[in-house]
Length: 474
Image (cartoon, rainbow, N blue to C red; front, top):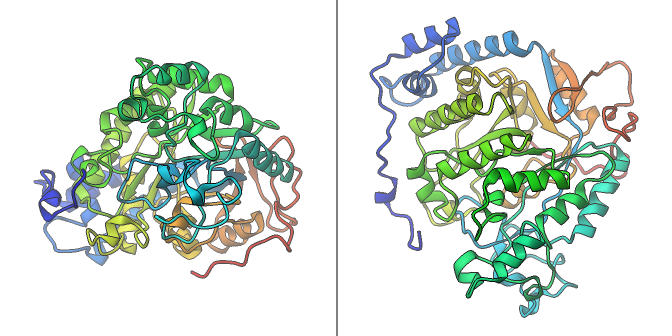
């Protein structure tokens, strides 16, 4: 979409109207029956027969979800010792909900402000978030991850912009360079066009595969970029990445899995079927998966529940490969959607709570629902643990995507933070592996608290007191 978004773009075919009643939907939820899309809409709206969110009905939905959570996973609240290592902010897709990316052309070697010596020193001209754009070489990625592994983390999560110089591997680069006009035809420019090259996806995955760390990377959108210009299947792409050390694929880039919404907020991205196809390809390659939703922008409740339905159906097709579902509340402050007046804000706290709750009730084949302290803050995130969520993310060590969109809740949570927060609501803190296969119940009376599940984790706190950032205000 090369023109501004108009009101006509927001006149959607799918609207939150049903012939179901709220009471019937809630009764089905209490009885553990599989919910329909209409059921989900009634619960998410607290009834289409009333305007706005009814506070009494909302609490009934939250109670049902919290009860289901207790039945499925008990009183444990899990978290993981992890690091975010995003490779590059260079991207030319232009999603309107995003302020993570920097225009790819500003990274070219001919761009005066994009020399190797300044690439991470100051914000790009087209970025308002106050955080410098960057591209990391595989060597730099390896150094970052190796240092974190020495500290005790055992998961690295990497999600990056779609840099035009990125290719899957050397064979893919050769194919891309064979096009008559690679940039126009397949969104490719050679590495020498840029001050710093990310090299290939395979080289980056190999670099991050250090010290037994679990590599969680390559979204469906990145997998599309890694096969552009070829007839390769997603399964083939993910198999090559798995051979390089990839362990699981994050189901981000999902946003809302309804094309009439995607055409407004991310017209340059893969469509719903493309996202689902990529996820199935990753599962066929033997990788674990997660799934997300990014809500609270232009979509309505019908779109949100259709998204849940597509994730639930996908989980059946991939034989349970999705380990967790992650609702992500739209952070609006520094995004084009907000700056252009398309949205006036993000989701309300009531909407956040209902999104978590209905995810728990609707996704009856996914055990774990995550509460994001990055999106909700510490206190808000704890409240979500009473709305159906049971996982509380990870230590992260560095978070760039939400921060650049205007997020205010910091980049790091220590094990001590987790133990204090989780026990404050009467729940049990549990360190987990990425795939939830390994778990360690933490005794709150036995400090100091640090990771123990990773190959180099020995219980030492990840950061010393002098290294720890100041706590964020909620």
